[in-house]
Structures are given as structure tokens and as C-alpha cells.
Amino acid sequence: MSGKSLNNILKGFKKAKASERTIGELGPVLFQPLSENKNRPVYKVWRNLTKKGDAPLLKKLKIRYDITLIFPKKLGRELPKTFGHYHLRNRAGIGYPEVYEVLKGRGWWLLQKPENRNPKAIEKVYLVEAREREKVIIPPGFGHSLANPGDGELVAANWIGEFKYDYESYENLRGAAYYLLESKDGKSVELEKNSYYEKVPGLVKLRPKEIPALGILKSKPLYGLAKTPEKLEFLIKPKKYLNLLKIENCFKRI
View 1 (cartoon, rainbow, N blue to C red):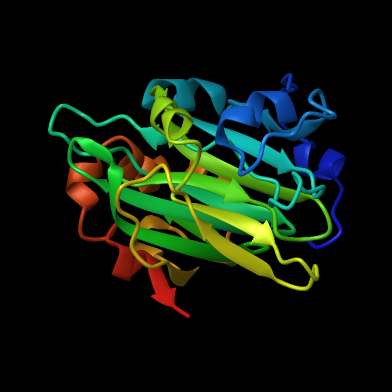
View 2 (cartoon, one colour):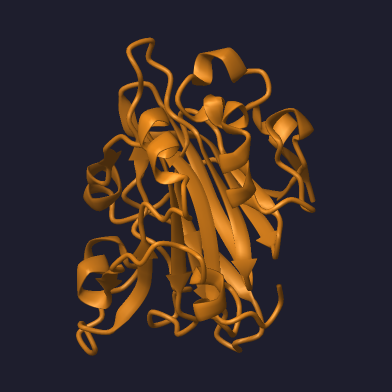
């Protein structure tokens, strides 16, 4: 899929209008405030995309397929990123998961799990790197933001249940537990702890695993799971799949 254009990626989906986040809208979560180019888009999202004949089933399941495009231009020294959010929990107190696929480029997911009732204290934090065709699970209870570490566009797709997001925790704490910053010589990326948090553990780097039991394979496009909707049940009934959705079952350390 390398080099595939956005138009080709979107081909076959029912037309949908993209929403976008600008530098100004990302202001509350940036490492440093940026006074210029506040109207420049940092990323765009096409939500609830469907192909012919799939819409009724996806509506019944209450899940949706989105595509996110993150432009490569940096935000000062900071890598371009999404705002970041947590997923709401179900009645049993279990957070809803999500699954992504990289369609173009390379993505870095910053996953963080806070202590119960204290979003300022982080118990675990991971940086997951994924490349084209690889899939990334967001396990229950983890907040996440997505960054583009490359020189070109990052395009990622996701399956997720229809529920509201919690952006407020990220906004109140000025972003994720770590900032991803370009080094002064421009040759590497530095990790800067966010001082608004009370507790931030060391960051662990991960790569995604395949999860055949959920149909999550590098060789199979993520949207194809629409044809086997039972494989997407974990998105809306996470309690049944908690063992499969553990960090050690979804990722390997690097």
C-alpha cells in the first residue's frame, strides 16, 4: 500500500465530509503554545465510512469505521499528533477498546493508563510503533493519542463502538503524559515528561502482534472485518475478551 494516495484509500466508501483539527484547536495539549498559523490543519478525520451494503449491519452493531490523516509538518518541536482522549466505560466499569490499522506511513500511539479516579497519576505508559498494514489495539482503560513521526502523511483507519470520548482529562493536563519532541539537531525524537501529571512511569516501547482470534492479521485489511462482524464483538462486549486484550497479548517489547 506504500505510496497509495488518499483518494485511492477513500475509493469505494460512501462519501463523507471530513472534520479537522487545527493548531489553534490543539493549543490546550501542545508542548508549547504556537501563536502563528493557528488555522493550519494538523489532522483530518472521516468518520462512519461504509461501503455498499454494509451500513445497515454496522448501524445495528453500533460500530463505525473511521480514517484519520495526520500531516507531517511539526508543531514547533513537537511531532504532529491527535488531541488525545479516553474511552468511556460500560456499566461493568470496563473501558471500550478500539483497533487501528496503518494504511499509509508510520504511526506512534502513546497509550497511558491512569490510577482509578486520579487521571494525574499514570500507572503504565507505552509507545507503540506500527507500520503499513499493521494493526494496533487500544486496550480497555487506556487513553491514547496518535503521532506522525515520518516525513510524509500518516493515514490510519480504526474500528470503534459508538460512544462518547473523554477529551477533558487531556485538556486539563495539557496533553498526554509525554511529549514527543524533535531533538535540537533534528536527527532523533526526545521524550519529555508532562509536568502537569503527578506521577509518570518510565515509557516502554512496543510493537503490535497479530491476534488471529480477533481476525487481526497483517495480511488482512481491517475493513474486511465488516464481512465477519462476530470478530468485531470485542469492541462492544469487552468483558468477554479481557484476556485477549491484555497488553502482553496485543504487543511485544522492543
